Length: 183
Image (cartoon, rainbow, N blue to C red; front, side):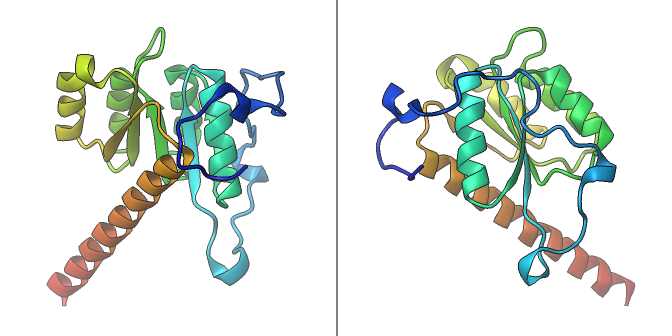
């Protein structure tokens, strides 16, 4: 799949597996995951995609996998929390849909932060105008950013890469400050 400069159309999904499984795209437990280095001594970045729309999960999985990320997809806030509780420090970023049934993205985000206050979450929403107050509340609560749906694959990838770079530099800065103050 090529990254395009246009909005997605139904033909972009032709040839994809139509048997969308509601289970996570990768169903591994921590003992099955190699923690060893990959080429260059750097492990791939890990993303948890949370969206109730099968097409959105499938697209995100393809975009991130083809860019070299390890990806797990789930369809609900409950599944997200289950995956995250098992490995609260394993994911580099969580792409979280705001509008989901049963437990929405805002409640899921609040629960993720209760487990790990440093969790990196990118919110994805198609209803920004209606949800602006909620998004602002989440941003003040530590949300790393948001992206409006529909988004192009290249936009999504660029936003994720930007957030991961920003987090990397802020954490390196914190470590440097900690080292300088303890010296």
